[in-house]
Image 1 (cartoon, helix red, strand yellow):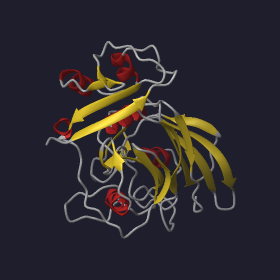
Image 2 (image 1 turned 30 degrees about the vertical axis):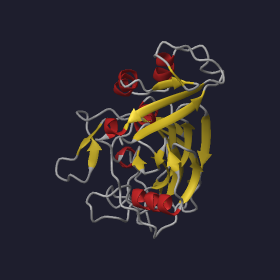
Image 3 (image 1 turned 60 degrees about the vertical axis):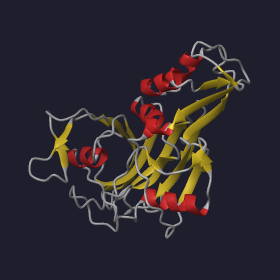
Length: 298
C-alpha cells in the first residue's frame, strides 16, 4: 500500500470565500505540489472530492492528500539519538522550534554522524511517537544556524511544510532576530549593513565583503554599551541569509563578535551570537506566533 501524507485544515473566516486554488497559493504551497493535488485528485472538502475551483466556507474541513513519492527527494531520515534532551520552545502538528545549544551541528554530513540537532529531534520523536500529516513525525531542516551559534531554530515534522516555511522565510514573512556581543562602540545606534558577501579568496571556510558577491542586508540596533571593556550588545535582523552573514558584516565593519575565532573576535568561551526571537507564521492557518529566548552569555 502506497503511503500518503494527509493534512486536514479547518477553514477560518480569513480564507472563507476563496477558491481552493487561491487558498493554496496564499499559504505558499509550491506549484508542483498544487499540480499534484489536482492531478491525483487529492482534494476533499467535508469528505467530498472537489476541484481547485471549489469555493471554501468558514468551518469547512479541507483535506490535502499527497502520495509519498512526491517527496522522494526529501531529506533524511536522520538516525535517532536520544542522548540529549532538547529545549523545545514551541510545538504543533507541523513543526517545532528548538533552542539549539552553541557547539551543536544542525545536521549530519555522513551516515556515521549522529550527534546533530536533527538526530536529537528524531530521538525526541522516538521517545514521544506522534503523527504529522498522517505519518510518523520526522525531523526536516528548514533553515540553518552555524554550529557555533545558539538559539531558536525551526524544525519541520513533515515534508509538506518545508517548502512553505522556506518561502515564508525567503519572503521575510517569518522574521528572525539575533543578539550579539561585539567589540567596539557604534557611531550610529541604529543602522544597516548592506555590503555584498562573497567567497574568501584563500580559505573556503570563510566569507568576506566583496562588491562582486551576493546581496546581503543586516539591520542593527545597539542595546547596551560597556566602555570599560569596549563592547556593545546589538540586536540584529536579517533580510537575507548568506553564510556567516552576521559574522562577516560585523567583523567587516570593525565590530567582530566576541568568541569568533574565524573572524578575529575577542577571545571568549563561545561565539557570542544567539538567535533570540522568531516572528513565526504557521503553515495552513496564517496565525502569527511570537517566540523569544534570551541567552545568559549574551
